[in-house]
Amino acid sequence: MEGTKRLDIAVAPFKVIEKEPFRRSILSGEGINRALELLENAYWFYSSILGHRAGKFTVIETPENYGGQAGKGYALVAGSSLRAEIPANLYHELAHLWNPRATPKAHLSRFFDEAFANYLTALAIKEIHGEEAFNRFIEGLRRNYEAVIERFPEAKKLRLSEWGRLGLWELSYTKGALILYEIHQRAGNAFYDVLRRLVEEESVDFERFRRIMKEVTGLEVTV
Image 1 (cartoon, one colour):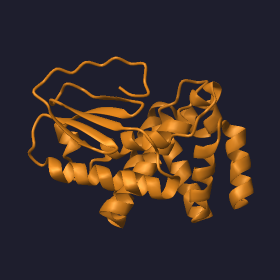
Image 2 (tube, one colour):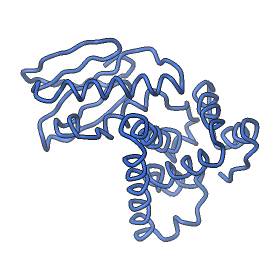
Image 3 (cartoon, helix red, strand yellow):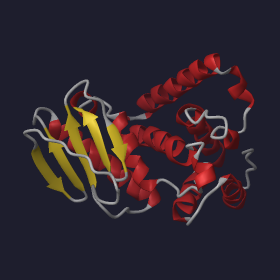
Image 4 (spheres, one colour):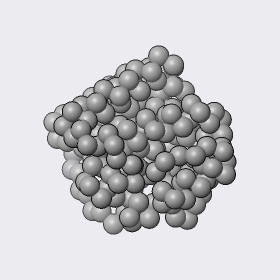
């Protein structure tokens, strides 16, 4: 795969469809046109708010129950996920192309990759599928966060910068994305300026995130 040191080998009767910046290896053509159109819509939406991202994004379809994975610029996804009415997993993996470059210490929390990818997924759902679908996705994040809190009640009192140190990085998928949602609600369109600043930074940590929030929106955030 381009841009990664991984070596993944997939052997199957694939049909390869290429259209810049995508390469799709699919097992069945059934329902694929809609899936590819949605993927392109998400790409151009992310590009419109965060800037064009160079390089290919490769999607490889896997049979059901074979599992999936993602890396820099690629995703292995089951056919059902690829062709879902709202392919949130696909939007999520695509969103990783725009991850802020977190310092190694900040990366432990997964806030700057998984929280950002999950909230960008929510925004893509809103843009492509409408407000009602967006609200359902946000409510799903809340339910999943509550399930985590049931297992780890102490997590409710933690700052997000503490999640990685304590091994609770899974909070970034739920609470992290909800934090970005709340910031967006308060900051309005200035939130997109924050995202663009973070994507352009050479290195980001929680203190840098806090300062950019203050500079761009005037909001103080506790990290």
